[in-house]
Image 1 (cartoon, rainbow, N blue to C red):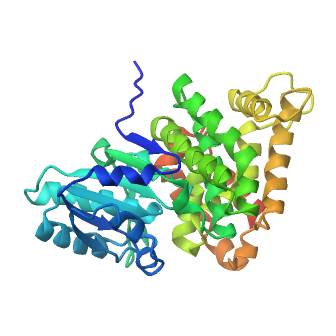
Image 2: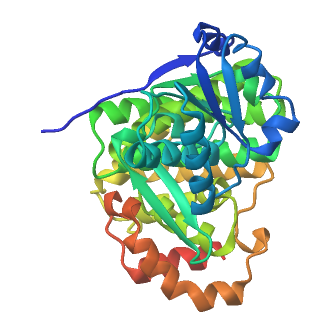
Length: 376
């Protein structure tokens, strides 16, 4: 038996933030980062919360460390809110999930309504039951996985992503595409997750370049925001694959932005999973057939499975070039000698990553090192 469930209510489109006006006379605890306060973005929330008592915890940093979560738990316990709002990218939402989850286990709190408001179109964290917390001293990322982490409400307002710089739009947009494609070929994929992944990928191919070229294109921003959420729903059910397995390790070791690392890996992982090496082959793997199918769905041409998969890879490379994205780790200031020295450790850690378990092709250490050699 398989199961598909959506706990989170999703409010989307222009004006979605107006929902906050419905929160009357509440105690609202907002978790965000210093930039959201400095840039005035926080006021788009507080202006809608005039009848409520609001506390802002604005210490979130990328890759939120354990110490930050502990600090947030203390603040939350003292304030004892009715509503907790996470405002920001994946780091703010991840940290909020951990703060709420551990707080519930450690202290008696009010029943909390958890609202996630993403300000980038990338992680899909507003609809996933995952969070990642970092132990900075050990250089280790700890994944938390539980349906208890799911927000009650996700608010996708394109107004909040209009000012995202184009290089972040590129990184996060390619993260969305990686989520969609990995969920689509995952061992755990179902008809339900496939439908979500297909739509997410279609929206990325149609709107990512438009959002990159003109941040004020509100339609493109809205569609990419929706794509991020759709891909999040897809991989929350189907999981991901070796692309993310390797990216998690490289992010921890070399601190390259997550979406950028995924983007660099994506063409090579598709080629590895599809495994189209023999020109005489008449039979293709299920992953190859699914890549070919999604290539057709997003409007690409090809006379057979091999041609469609190659065109999918080429289209991704064209998008990367159009957005001035790096295609090697060297371009991200990763030292080649250091990478070579760590390749066995990286491969072993990537194989242990939970995402790698659902990859359609079972990799070994040599396979991971071969992929690393292609991106160094």
